[in-house]
Length: 463
Ligand code: LLP
Image (cartoon, rainbow, N blue to C red; front, side, top):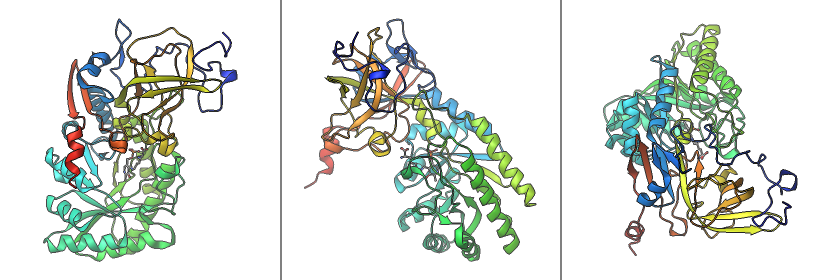
């Protein structure tokens, strides 16, 4: 069939307009396990299922758009990180990726700790019963009220991010009659190979205290003098969605270098090192993420080796994966509203959500995959752009992908790997109602976070 004869837009790789796509998969009905949650499959009718439930049934019950989360997969991934690092290390799940009370309970049950970075995340963690000593409190501008709440609750560590905060936390802890365990977050000067907005170890940005110019050493010097603080370690987080382990190696090398300088200057061996989160996941079949056991092995080896060379006792390592645990466990289910072929370009598929439930494509140029979920199809692949319903042309969910050429309004499509930073960064743009998060496990579904209602919106509008 020639391109012009195909009503729904171009389909052959040699005539495709500019974009980031690979050739269409041989069979668009096949779901690549790399990008889909572990219990996802298709039933005998070709309908996508998760946790044994067809998405058509979930759509009927909970509506669309909806984030559908595979609980068994979440637990397995959390457990894999815990097992990979073992009892001599700690895994802190980064709650900013997605946090709800059920998630907190799963983490607690699976033996993970929790990283929070705001009063709201702290409140969620505490209200779900996470023991405070297993919580780490982050942020580059924690308010005095947040610090006080964290100290009063007895959080296991506060990660200090500036000279002012060193004094602030020491003062608050002391005035409450205690000593707060803290880590000092440093920037090690590594250029992580990821989007600029989610790279955090180069020096020209807001997080951490630079190692360069002796600032990190000065921060430690000051913190060690303050009675309100117990300095337990150094923290480094180099960025997010990273595949290349070399950045972590350089970071570990520089963090251990600082530990050695601290030992030489103060005679103190700090007992902990936190290497942050940031491990990448597969959003498309082209991504090849590392497994937790490979990451654990690489990080442990490098810290051990560097410490041996510096004649330091190996500190207790901690890590803070967020995306790598929750990201692959959920997908977003949308209903197709319109299908608009643009001759010689591509076909625009409008769904009932958009940048309000997934801002990552617009913000980071993130790539996603998509599949027809309510049925299978043998129609020819067509090049599509999946867009939302918001008043903005940058409202794109999936920039370039292939879907069957017979796609029609009323079909359900699913975008995988939306478990991290989609619901947590969702907005009410255009007064959209944020979708629910529905957990599915062993044939049973339950709402973790319900869909917003117009009453929710109007309740805030008190004018
Ligand atoms: N630890 C710290 C101190 C962090 O700042 C972060 C993420 C993490 C751990 C977890 O990183 P993960 O393992 O999830 O990559 N909104 C962006 C990501 C921002 C990440 C912020 N910090 C996105 O949607 O890609």
